[in-house]
Length: 424
Image 1 (cartoon, rainbow, N blue to C red):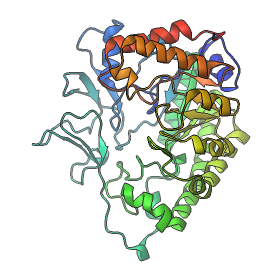
Image 2 (tube, rainbow, N blue to C red):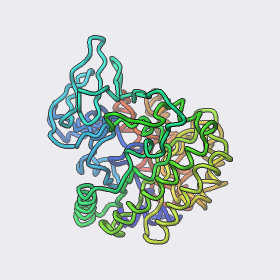
Image 3 (cartoon, rainbow, N blue to C red):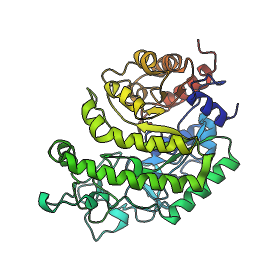
Image 4 (cartoon, one colour):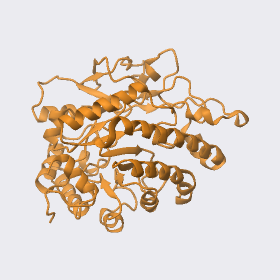
């Protein structure tokens, strides 16, 4: 089977020739840039010192180029925005040596000048004349989004203020989607994942609007979560307007890429924490589900795309809601969170939603375990999630920095050796 056929079979709950590998250039299923460099050296793909591009500075996702994708056995490629979370175009690449010595390439406008305390600030659209919207603490591995919340006057609060970053997709962005999807469809045999940010209702990584120079509305994370209770009608109206924008943009994207795409990543809003859901099922049903359903209904009516929801944490109580909302795929399947036992998840939901993730614990086993522990956990999760199809292998979220090389190699060697059907 081709990688594309393999992914389609798995997402249709059939057993392909082997379990597909769903790691690609997309946040949530990507790899930290420092680890990308480590892997490229381990596979002897580059001379030492060859830099790696940082595609998404927020979580420091590094570029998985085609040669590395082949080495990892990846079956998926991603088409994402031509701008990153801070509004910087992914172009004009220039060198930056990370604090651990890893050689990287960052886009024009990416601030590489440290502050006196050793931290590094990120500015929206690279404009240093406005307040920074992100910070990497000294010795940190990611950028944290900074709150730039202005005083809130409820009498003057306008729905439009929380929609400034959403709007009709630009011709430039459409052309990028069309060009990249056609290139990947024609020149690779891999499944194609596209990501459309306008469909991510209430994504706490986007609420502070790190790409906007002067965000208005409710932008502080705590204030946003509290507003689900104190300003429920306002949140509903924001989502209602956003949904209208999103479906119009989906129509235009479909006209540009057609059914060459296999999967559409619709939302990265986290509904769970380590110990339980962040929202009750009632809050999800009242505020999120109506708009998720409108978006997934549009996709299923007009396209062959599979619908993808990323939600970290303990979401066992919400999975039935996600299924009713029309999601075909759940990621990242955080098996280390409360109630997220792989055996129970597969038994209760495996015939109704596909799992993309859950392959290995990136909080403990992969960075801190032994190679034998990595092999054991990967083997068990392949066996549990893989039976009957409905599984695309990926770790639980991005592969982080500081993972030992031997653990990385154990991960991919085990998937290659143990991922063939029949799973025993």
